[in-house]
Length: 323
Image (tube, rainbow, N blue to C red; front, side, top):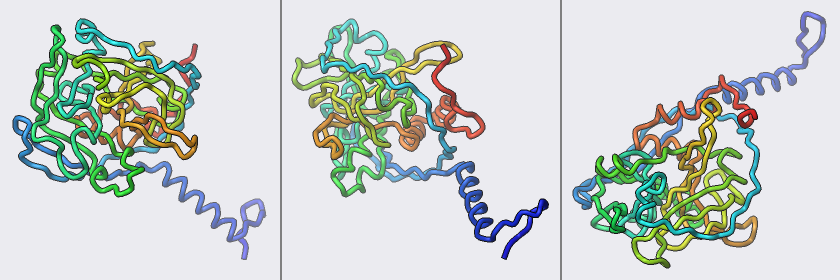
């Protein structure tokens, strides 16, 4: 059976079915998707857990356009740099904080610290009766504050495959307002495809266990490979640096400013079946993780607006800023 067009051309029913099917999938791509975000929210009083509950909410995610970003081939050796007590009071080094469980974190908002989930939860319960967050003062001593709340993805507890734990190894700690008020913070950024991905230079600062107490050391290197949820790199990292915020820079085409963005969190060391060797890895703030973190810090609208060209289907992402 055939249908005839106005010009007399015949279109088979099967061909028409293919066209309609393609149109259906095209409409699905254009339509905004709603992601269901689930997480565990832990309330603490002076560091002691008083309540833990699972929370579910929905966040609307628009289809993302592929980023056209030039890759950078610069690779830095794993040379760590020490920052003294004076430097630690200056931005962006002032955003680095210590977690009382022996990890590092970074302020991503005045009252919120991004860190690794394994730093505060052992996949069964909160790791310590007392969870505190501290920063180095001018004398090089740690000033501690009790955590108010802890957020971590539900999958951190549910994932049974040990090789997939790293995909959900991120968490946020709510801290007293006065901690972030004077220290500053680096806002979260979106990492997808080549945008803050393979070939980009990333930085992180932490408290390594192999160095004297109350010293921060920084590392930087090039991202060698990525998956949707992970960075693979050779930045030098030792125990104690886990949970460090991985940040990079992006240019604002309008203001020409180069802005730091936290695009991930250092997880640990992991074997790569592709390269057949081990890398240090970090969790990427892909669209799902990025919006989940933004939900925790109550900045969903700002986060979407920050990357409107990626989330809004009416705007096409252009290449890097024109020279």
